[in-house]
Amino acid sequence: MDTASDSDKVAHIEGQIHDKWFRLSMVYFNPKDHEWCLYLGNSQKGPFDQILKIEGILDYSYTDEPKIDVYDINQIKIDASCGTLILTSGFPLEIKLSISPAFKISLC
Image (tube, rainbow, N blue to C red; front, side):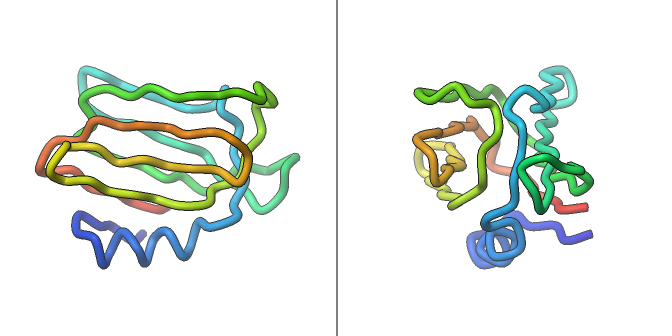
């Protein structure tokens, strides 16, 4: 399992998940534990057997214009000054997560 909380380590995880597929309908968010998970796979049809887990999430939202449910991961952007982490897709999808200063990203 790789865990990251700084920009260099997040870039490493981004390299591991770039072009992995996920279903937006499978996003898991537990506001009580501040945990957000995205299930990833190598194919549009799955299996989605890797988990991108982000801890220290206060809230999240997304903009989903195509509404196709299955997307690929393109980029992870962090703006620590605004407390946001943004996941983008090659399709017009943006997932915006509000992060605490002690956030962690794990890939398992």
